Image (cartoon, rainbow, N blue to C red; front, side, top):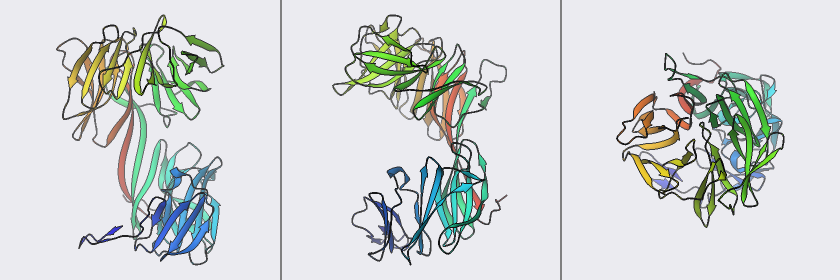
Length: 437
């Protein structure tokens, strides 16, 4: 549907939009995905059909040129990014391996400047730095010459093109960074951590000062200086336990852990797990929790010295749960409440109610004496520490910029905190290759 912003008039372009992936500005040209094929119609008549093998995740990376002559589609393969350019006047297309800086990289965004030029966002090597490039096309639609860098590659960044008008492009740059807040030191300032930071943060170990970073089919364990301590692949949920990576899964009613060498240990105990694990998490203080669904309800068991403790549910529609170091309590939170669940008694003690704020994440300190949690209150984002004694008042550990999202939070010794952020920055670049000042 198109909407005239002056009159408010609405015009239906396609009655069935389930597989529509791109529409020209005037609504005449519509691109759809049909199985592995890209099908493009102009004024209701199909003018191009090509086997581009687009996956559902790639379907946003289809764009029709401003003049309606060409369509571009990108997808990622094991060998790198692939660009398909189809000519809607001839019905033919060209597929080209996208190479920037001499490497076959991944593609995350594509936008037309005109019928012969494309702006492409992606990496200059698989899993490496993300940048923004301008590519020129010949009459057939093939790339001519090396891409020109519009925005220099930056590690742990994703470049996306929002709009192009004339010779200027509006770009959103998304930075994914791990940051360390060292409150036990003299400065107390936060700083980005080096190395391997494009991977998600999944866990921390306070005693060994190590972090668990997840990746597809495996995990990495790194020190705070970025040095790699272990790289493991395995079947199951990655867990950082006693400074080493393990993979947890349900096996015969118990939880089985396997290390990177395939050695297995079983965690028996008071609980019979009759389903697949939803997750397992070990806090930085050493306590662990396993979670699974039983009869549609999210159920948990803490892992103590004798293995799995009794199964329990929380009388709170929790968004997150963290085990205490001694595996007797669980820190839970909803969007607006932070509480502590006592496993032995089933008692739920509400620590904070924040009706006008959202609690994003919550975790015990390494010694279990306090909770550290992140909140969003309007445009203010903060990380807090609150002692677990009755009547304690929270104090701010870190104030964040409004455009920073905290996606994961872990604690180390003392008041030291590690958190993963997604940071957004908009900028304008000139499509002739010269960045604006």
